Image (tube, rainbow, N blue to C red):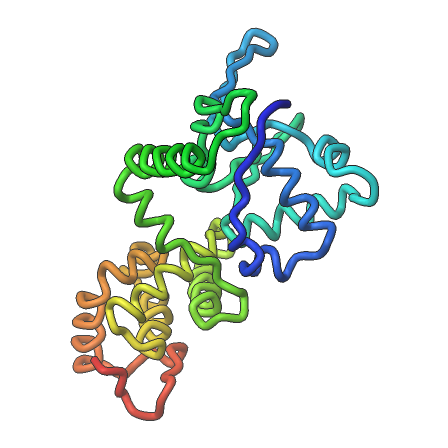
Amino acid sequence: MNGWIKLHREIMDKPIWTESTPEQKTILITLLVMANHREKEWEWQGEKFKTEPGQFVTSLEKIAQKCGRGITIQNIRTALKRFERYGFLTNKSTNRNRLVSIVNWEIYQSLDEEDNKPSGRQLTSNQQATNKQLTTNKNVKNLRTKEVKDIRRKRVYDETSNFYQLAVFFFEQIKSNNPDHKLPNYQVWADDVRKMVELDKRTEDQIKYLMQWVQQDDFEMANVLSPAKLRKRFDNLVMKVKQQKKQQPLPDNVTPIKKKYNYGF
């Protein structure tokens, strides 16, 4: 495997690094190195397969082998689950192998360095600065507007943060109605909760109350199954709560956060 990867220094300030064990840090770097830089196609037993940049097909044993001495299969399993919770990767396993996909790979990695290799002579300072500026401009130009915004706004939420805890709380409410509901990406959910608080100016009490309420409403429990949907329909849901409040008392299993019905709606 040739080439190299980009690793931003800010990773050292992220919980995925600061809260990881030395073994998990080794696994993290190894996964980045193992990811494909380009599309890859192959045929096996007459069937065609394809992986995108940032993806690779592997096994727990193969990852452990690449990591080197001191890394066990259990270390790999634990790290993959943890990195998935942080929204760093997705991990789909089959009977034969597993597909690992690094999230936002194309945003943070680029092939430009392979198309812009320096010659054998050392570049001057001015040349290096010029090439670096050209590469940066090209990268930004090639990114869609949404991706640029994602770079600026991308956050990793600690599991003890209020936003993350509200995301977990909402999933627990959903599971009370459907124990088999698919485990969400808590990082994405936490970010949607943050947007409700910081951008929409909702209080955490209001959000928590509605998370309870929608999962007790016969109609909304099947329609509001994520913080993003809750955010989108927030005002409509508030109106329904007000109408229900006029018609009947609150359900016993919706626990008020305060003694009075005073959540700003």
